[in-house]
Image (cartoon, helix red, strand yellow):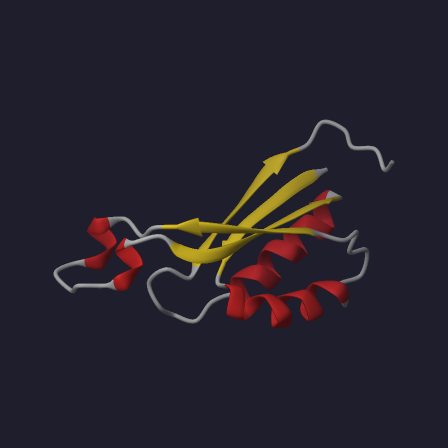
Length: 100
């Protein structure tokens, strides 16, 4: 079992949600509002408003390994705009999880 966490642009959330809900075995997700900054070394010499806190959303999904990889692929495809500050996605192992 894995936990997928992604920080993405709020404008990409609706398309991402629709895509994730269509994945076979998709267990659901948690979404929270957050803010972030882009590392100065990624900006180069250009002045960019992303150096201040920019609104983002944090998407979290706990799923079986095969589904988690589908989730990561979908996030990488549907959350990307090709611009600096699109976000990040990471995957960590989960020892156990129980529905309540």
